[in-house]
Image (tube, rainbow, N blue to C red):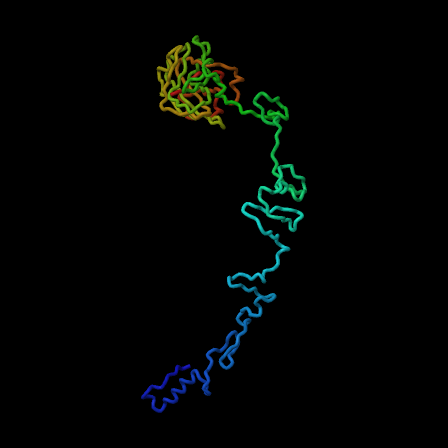
Length: 374
């Protein structure tokens, strides 16, 4: 639709009337009434320029529904429901009696309506209304704390005769005592048993045998190892001992014609028995171990710290015409042949190997007395 305008004063000669009519007809009918700009409202068309709407036309609440059945509730001046529009809930909720003060509680009475009797000070509550001690209330009593389906957490009662007994006081295999037939006691380790007497130990050192088993000055308990044979004596470390020297005693035979002599320390794998060299002395060369009936202290090239509870082995190797005899202890082959090993030897060696497998070792019945310390 072309926009219209008013005639221009002093202009539009001969056409100003038409221009004015076109302008007026935009909003007026030919009879002078106003045209309606609204075409429809909620699908309703105007009548003489007006549209009449009902509450339902705009989803509004009709005034006829206010406070009416199935209608809507009305609010008072404080935006709250009026008392006339609140339903009766006496059959659903327990009415609270009037009265009561700080510290008072409602006392239950099965004879009263809804089980509520009155307000009462806490000190006057009937003790029958309180939960009863375990076992004191009759099962199934409705006013007691223990209804028929109640459950209490129960303590576990143990006959004192079923408790573990001190070691040695319970009869072995007695089913009601602390030591049944399949019981197991934690046993002390080998390193605790060996040299259990404190006088057998050496301060800040580890020993391969109790000192009382280290032989005699006459050399009656000593062995002269064969040339080229690595001798191994096992022990369990009692502590994290630092080892920088290994001390042993030579018996009545001194080394003669020696070409090489070594002392070393091996760690032992608990699962496979494989030995790994952890420390080694320098080659003692032609000197060997020359002293008789005297201790020999051999320094390791570097110190090593032992792991408490781990198994180790002291190793010696002499190569030459005559090897020095060494103090220690003998035992039956059946005893030294048991697992775990106490001793072992490896023949035809020119130096101490970096690793030795358990399967390559032969069992020897001689155990060297040695002291491993700083």
